[in-house]
Length: 111
Image 1 (tube, helix red, strand yellow):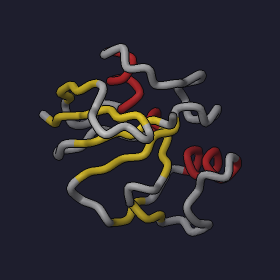
Image 2: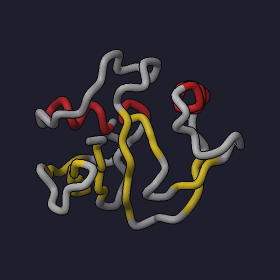
Image 3: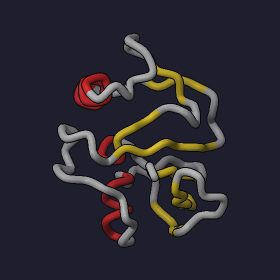
Image 4: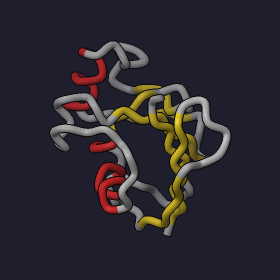
């Protein structure tokens, strides 16, 4: 089980924390725990469930799915045009595409 803590941009302390099983979608966890994470479609097409992540495996790289890549590029949030993106605390992701992993995760929501 992983510990997931939620922060607001500019906030110093988490406003919520919960435990999650690896493989749980971050958007599903937020909805289950009543975390105020903005979302509309839940399928990765609207781009409203933006988050930034901090975890023990950073910095690193990841390969976003085509839908996440296209949506984040359309909204100007893609970190680069390459197929492999940097996995850093500054990289925006869509919560409906992020699965909780084996390690603890800090999730930063836009202000």
